[in-house]
Amino acid sequence: MAEMTTTNRKAEITAEPGKQEITIRRVFDAPRELVFRAHLDADAIRQWWGPAKYKNIIDKLEARSGGAWRFVQADTDGSEYGFHGVFHDVTSPERIVQTFEFEGMPGHVSLETATFEEQDGKTLATFSSVFQSVEDRDGMLQSGMEGGMNEGFNRLDALLESAK
Amino acid sequence: MTRAKFPPEYCACPLTGDHLVTYNRSMEVEHVFSALADPHRRHLLDLLSQTDGQTLTQLSAHLPMSRFGAMKHLRILEEAGLIKSRKVGREKLHYLNPAPMQDVANWVEKYRRLWEERFDRLEDYLQQAQKEQDNGRNDHDEP
Image (cartoon, rainbow over all chains, first blue to last red; front, top):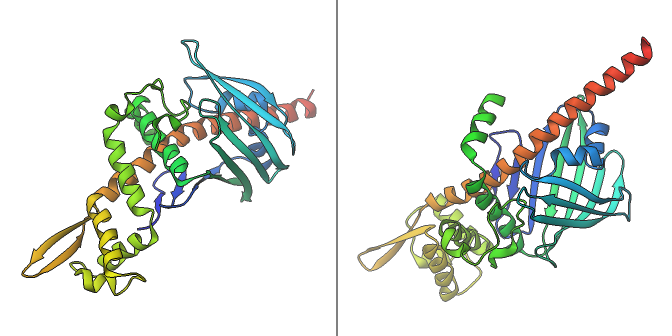
């Protein structure tokens, strides 16, 4: 009861009430090195990062411990939204620790840890986000609700059904 | 909680002040989440899930606090709609009401779907990259 976990589909999300953390787990049918690289390669990130309706601009990507990153998501109406942070630890191919901040809400920084484990040729990826407060965490979860209202989930539902 | 905390990455709407009106329903969910945030209140819900329909005296016996403290937590749970109470004679009995919990689960589910969409695209990329890698290998083997 205390834990909200959804496991019915591929990605599993855990958000425990009162905690500042969100954990997401997902298995990818690809070798670990490839999944790891897709998180640090500009071409790859352009293709998968963020919602599809935005164009990803990789402004800065110093994919090493101590390096900085900054991505911009451009809307068709010309709006741009920046996200940035620093890589605290990049250990190939198993771990990336970085900070994450949306420039529209400066000061709300989360610490993101991605770990990649090999499982029979597949890769179990675990993404943990630790926010500065429970409110920040719940706000991020809630944004999923708001985004959900606008993203046309019926279409996505059909897509997910067919992918099963 | 401030409304404008949500990156437009997940929020297609402009960051305007009318969010409170537009997203009333998620505000209710937020209420449930903050009610669930306290470990004593989760303990109270656990107690009721084991034995439904308990009095304040019965419930507060399990909590490391005064009757008044327990009453305060029960009130928050009741306001969030997570429990209901009924007067039976002189006693007030508390019952579990799990419906709002489902709202929170739906909330998390929608966030998960956003990530699912993103991961589907990552998977497309990974498959493409693997194909290119394999082709590259074949090119070397058979020039």
